[in-house]
Amino acid sequence: MKTALDNIAQILRKLMDILEELEEAYLTARQSALALFVNLGNLLAGLSISSALGQLRAHPWVLRIYPQVLGTRGILTGIFSARTSTGLHLGSIDSSLRKNTQYFYSLVSTMLVLASLSALMIFALFSISSLYPSADVFAVVYTTIATVSPFSLLFISFTAFQVFKRKLDPDILLYPTSSVLNDVVISLVFVGVVRAIISQTTTLLLVLTIILAVLFSALGFYTFYYGERSVFLTTLKEGGLALFIGLSIELGTGIVLSELLKAGGIAKIAVLYPVMLSVLGSSTSIVGSMLTTRVSTGEFDFSISSLKKFSQNILGLQAASVAFHGVLSIIASILVKDFSFLEFFALSYLSHILGFTMMIPVVFITAYVTYRKGLDPDNFINPIQSSIADLVETISILLVARNILK
Image 1 (cartoon, rainbow, N blue to C red):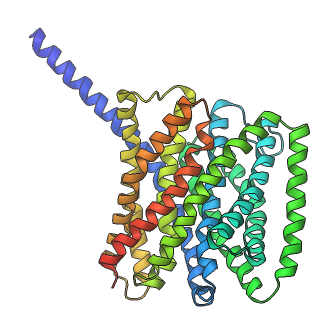
Image 2 (image 1 turned 120 degrees about the vertical axis):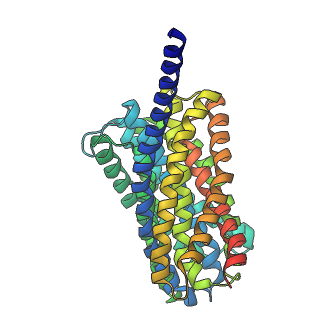
C-alpha cells in the first residue's frame, strides 16, 4: 500500500512539473502573440516600398542600402531595448521619462551618437564596396537615420515604462512593438528622402545633414564630460563594434535582396518583405532579451537544466508564431492579387522556421561568448542577431520563393 501511494505521489509530482512547464510556455505564448501581431503594422512599410518600386529600381544603389538602413533600426533598437528592459529589471532605470536615472539619460544620449556613427558606417561600407562615394547616398542615409532616431528612442522608452508598470515582461514586448513602428517610419522617411534626392534637392538635404551631425556631436561631448562616462564609453565601444559587424552583414543582405527580386513575384515580395524580416527579428530578439535578463539575474547559467527550462519559452513563442503566420496569410491573400492563403502561408512560415532554426544557436553562442569575455550581452545579442536574421530570412525567402512563386 505504501509503495502504491509513493508511486501515485511521484506521478502527481511529475504531472505538476509538466503543468508548471506548460504554464511557462503558455505565458510566453500569450505575450509573444501580442508582440508578434504588432508586426502586421509592417505591411505599411512594405506598401510604401512597393508603391515606389518602379522609381527606386531605376536607381540600383537605393535597394542596396535599404537593408542597411532598415537593419540599423534593428541594431540600435536592439541595443536600447535590451539595455532598457534589463535596466528596469535590475533597478538601474526607473519607469519615468521626466525623473529617471543618470544612467538612463546617458544611455539615450549615447544611442543618438551611435545613430550618427551608424550612418557614417553605412556610407563608408557602400563607398568601399561600390568604389563610388556618393553625396546622394550620404544625404539619404544620414538624414533618414538622424531624423527617425530621437522619435524612436522616445517611443521605446515610453513603451518600456508602460509595459513594466503593468507588470508585463518588456523582454518579450519591447523590441517587437518598437521595431515595427520604427520600420514603418524609417521606410516612409527613406522613400520620401530618396524621392527628394531624385528631384534634385541634394544640397538642401546635405545642409540638414550637417546641422544634425553637429547637434549629435555636441550631445556626445556633453555626455562624455557631464554624464556617466562609463556608460558612454562602454556603449560606444561595444555598440560601435556590434554596429560594424551588423552593418557589414546587412551589406550582404542587399545583394541577396537584389537576387530575391529576380526570383519572381516581385510585388508580392516587396509588400511583405519588411513584415517577414521583422517577425524573425522579433522572435529571436524575444529569445535574446529574455536570455540576457536571466543571465544578469542569475536565473540562467548555460547548464542543461537551465536550457531545458528555457526551451518552454521557445515552445510558447513558436506556438504564437504559427497563429501569427496564419492571420498574416489571410491578410496577404486579400491585399495581393493572385496570392492564395496556402501559397503565402507556405512561403512565410517555411522561411520563418528555417531562419529561426538557424538563428537560435547564434543567439545562445553570442550570449555565452560575450558573458564569458566579461562584455555586456545586451550590447551584442540583439544587434548581431537582428543583422544576421535579416540576411538569413532574406536567403530563406529566396530559397522558398524559387519553389513556390512562379
